Image 1 (cartoon, rainbow, N blue to C red):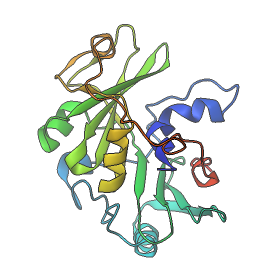
Image 2 (cartoon, rainbow, N blue to C red):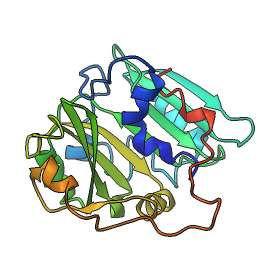
Image 3 (cartoon, rainbow, N blue to C red):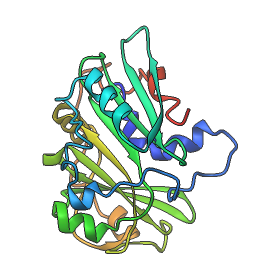
Image 4 (cartoon, one colour):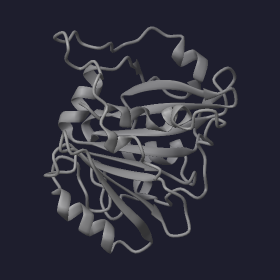
Length: 237
């Protein structure tokens, strides 16, 4: 999957920003959206009427153009691969969100960076318990807990106040969500190192446990992430 980097996008912004300070994962100017807790106007793997692997690319762009409060819709195409991405933000906010198609036919992935207005407990109450956990340290004060819902083709990101002492708890704020096609979700699972979700616990307790899922062997030259298209390199404009 050429744009598997979307899964890591929240964290590699640091690299893209070169010498800039690490990004603030919690930003009130990101997209305000409660669909992870109230299923409005639709529930995962659908967001705002768009479902990866199902919704046509042109239809998705029309939906975004017609959605009140969404502005600055911009598209970028990789002429060599045919991949295309569109970025947008909420009115009065900052660039936050991206939809992606590998060939311009269907939406394959959507990444939403969210204003921290919903908690992990609210998401779990609505969606149920996640299946897998993956942790990433972003800075000494910030870590991210990626929580996987394979059957919903969804990854939800919860904020943790530092890798050393932070905890994945009921009050952990949700700052991003990644919606995938079923095919891409399966590929992510098969190419990632993941821990089983075992409930609320410290970040360190999770990352110190052995992985329960490890990448499947691949044919040499496949799935090595060698190709990274330009379409995903400028999600924030």
